[in-house]
Amino acid sequence: MNFCLTVNCPIQRGVVAAIATFLAQNGCNIKDSSQFDDKETGRFFMRLSFVSEEGKTQDMLEKAFAEIAPDFAIDYAFHDESEKMKVVIMVSRFGHCLNDLLYRTRIGALPIEIVAVISNHMDYQKIVVNSDIPFYCIKVTKENKQAAEAEIMQVVENYEAELIVLARYMQILSDEMCQKMSGRIINIHHSFLPSFKGANPYKQAYERGVKLIGGTSHYVTADLDEGPIIEQDIVRVTHAQSALDYVSLGRDVESQVLARAIHAHVHHRVFVNGNKTVVFPASPGSYSSERMG
Image (cartoon, rainbow, N blue to C red; front, side):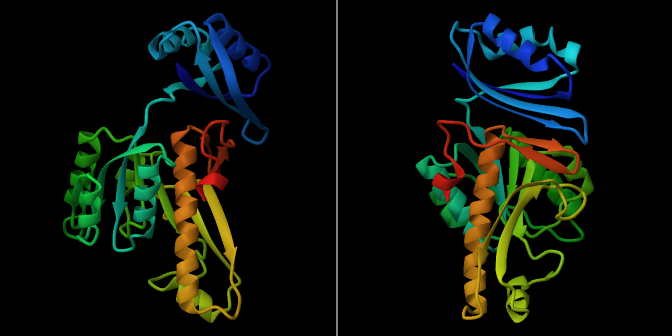
C-alpha cells in the first residue's frame, strides 16, 4: 500500500533519522522525500511517500508513530494515496474554473471526487447534473447570510467533504466559516488586487495599459483575499490586445492556477507556515504542473 506522511515540527537534530528509522523498522520503503527548514519561524517541514511492504495499515502506522512523535513535538498525518479527496465546489456566474475542474477530474488529471457543487445562481445546474454530481442552489442575501452558510456547511458535512473550492464564488464567507474550515477552503482571483477592484478589473487593467495578467490561488481566511498563497502564474499582454483578450487570457490563467493549487493540496504538498506556505514539488508518478496546464 502507498502512503504519504506529512511532518511539521521545531527544527532539531535527529528528526529525519528518527522518521527514516521508524519507517524502515515498520517494513516501509521510502519512494520520495522533500524537506525544508524555515530559519525565520524555526519550523521543519517534511513530506514522504512510501510503500508499506509488510502489510502495515494506516491505523497501525499511526498508532506506532504516536509513540515517537512527542519526542520531537511532531504534528503529523498519514494519508492513503489511493483515496481521492472529497471536494465541494462553489461557483457564482463565471463558470470557466468550474468547467475546467469538471474536465480535469473526468480525465483523471485531478485526482479528486467532486461530491457536490453549490451556487447562489442556477446558471450551471444543467452541466453539473449532466456530470452526475449533486447541485445545490443556495441563495445568499444580507438578510439570510447566516442561514445560507449553515445550509452550505450542512451540505459539506453530509458529503464528508474535506475541501471547499471557491471556483469564482462571488460571496464573502463569514469569519466563523473561515475559522471552522481553516486550511480547507481554496480560492482563486485575478492578481490585480489591490490596484483594480470591483466588477470590471480587466477593463480597468486594459485602460491602464497593464502588461501582465495573473492569477492567485490561496487559502481563505477572515482577511479577504489575503490568505496564505498556494500558487500563482502570469501571462504577458501587449498594447495590440483588447479588453476582451485580457478577460479571455485571465480566465485561462485563473483556471490553471486553481487546478495546480488543488493538485498540490490533495497530494498533501502544501504546509501553512504563518502567513505563507511551504509547497513541495510534485512527487514522481503524480501529474506535474506542466502536464496539467
